[in-house]
Image (tube, rainbow, N blue to C red; front, side, top):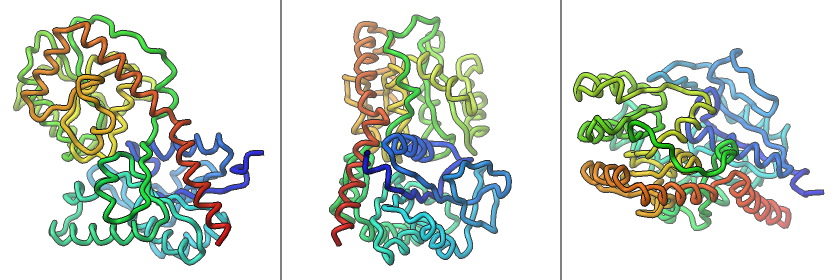
Length: 383
């Protein structure tokens, strides 16, 4: 019998359904794969919707008397969360706690775990300083608080999982035990074998993203406006508070055609995969990513990536091999036109992109996470 079948792991996260996005997706994929390895997984998260939640038995919602919507996102603030989390931990008796945020629930769970001598793993999903504009307080004060909290939190856990080498380098001053394990993408992305892109009337560009400021989507629209509109099209897939603003910028300011620039909000997973497969190139301009799961998803569908550099891009995008790293709008435009004009080189990029994505299969990443769990659990037994 696999010894993991006797082990319970508790995930603690501030982000979970009804949210969607990279963090929630990576948590859910990891949960599914760890259960296949024999673990029993529970998730403690915030209560965003009250009785409207229809959760499976492994999801536990901490009471949140304050609920509201901010920029189209459900928000919740817990009350006396530590007492509640402590009760759940006493009931579940986890062998290890895996934290996914250093604030709110993660901070409280870490305090309890240290008292109870439960090993702690923390995945650094988010470059928090890139999101300070969401806090309605002076930026310098918030930045100082965030840096101190993250430093203190990292120092309190046993192991940190960084999704990329660039993030590992950022965190090394906070903690010495940092393992680089990228988040995986869902198995459904690997079901179709590689095939070359079909010839279409227009060379199709794609971005899949939340429509928020830090994703830098106006950069992409501006770049697209410089391309010959007779030969290129652009699909923007996602959701978020900036969607209407981006549509106005595309159609009113840049005067782009709705036939050439198409916004698609929250497609189904099957439809999303079809969009990835149909696209010729995936373009990306965010510089706030710790990994950028959408890049791996695109490559799993044989779609090369052209992107500005960033921590989340550097590990997966290999310049001239499976895509291009560019410094500005002019370079991105030039690489897109190069791919359009050079079929043989473009086909090679597609094949190499698909090969790269095979490294992000969920069973591979879950196995690496499991090894880290076992080291800590066995070490804790000896104490």
